[in-house]
Amino acid sequence: MPLYELLRELTQVPEPFAVGGPHELWTDPHVQRQMLACHLDPDVAAASREHAFIDRSLDWIVAPLGVGPDTRILDLGCGPGLYANPLAAHGSRVHGIDLSGVSVEEARRRATCDRASFEVGDYLTAPLPEHDVALLIYCDYCALPPGDRRRLLERVRARMVDGGRLLVDLHSEQRFATLTEACTIADRLMDGFWAPGEYVGVHQAILYPEERVALDRYLIAEPERTRTVHAWLAHLTVDEAREEFQGAGFRVVEVLGDVAGAAFDPAAPVYALLATPT
Ligand SMILES: C[S@@+](CC[C@H](N)C(=O)[O-])C[C@H]1O[C@@H](n2cnc3c(N)ncnc32)[C@H](O)[C@@H]1O
Image 1 (cartoon, rainbow, N blue to C red):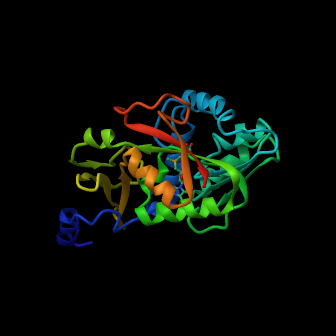
Image 2 (tube, rainbow, N blue to C red):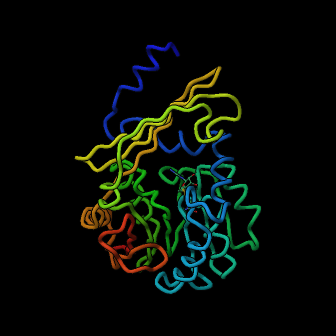
């Protein structure tokens, strides 16, 4: 890419969610392997939360979601199965779907019983199985544009049994208030996360205060190719999220602090919703 075009791209601010999509972030072969290493590092809260949190979350999930031996759980964006496999080992039948082939392969490798199944797919387009419980964990809901949030909820609603449960965590408006804009340029930005060989990376943190949307834009310039990755995050108030859920056929039955059952904290960066079909 000529230098003029490259610099010009860095000065352009797209409309919220107007460009990019999850494929940019989750399906590059090298980045998938880096993401998997983050998922599997017990102490890093990046692609998955720290494993001590996941253990607490798994202990908590069972009761409020009514998880028993015959429960059919749909894990949306399951990653390497850090939730799905323990839940299947606990006796449920779990189906995980994820865009990342590398993560799905790892989830299958870690499966300890045949009650867990995994597929590489896009939860916005792939046929979803009938289920009693759906999980969308680690704020992936907020990575979606409003139209896709609605579409995903409606798709899940259409395949969830009456009385089923949906557990989702979200970024709050309080989190947005802590963010600042920034621009960093570095040789092998993030220590080789974005490409196996030589590259220069530019990271721009761009904020849209009116919409409460944050964009992390990465421009990765390798000797032979240049690409841009957009990671969008919406920040919703509980009332905004509740309205979105209601519009898609869900009633919020509980507002929580996180997916490990903490009490809701209005000052916290994250909260979780437990919802049921209306
Ligand atoms: C932040 S990670 C969370 C993984 C897992 N839920 C956990 O907490 O360990 C988000 C996951 O969702 C997947 N993902 C993102 N968009 C997706 C989509 N449209 N369809 C299926 N998977 C998607 C990514 O590949 C990634 O594994």
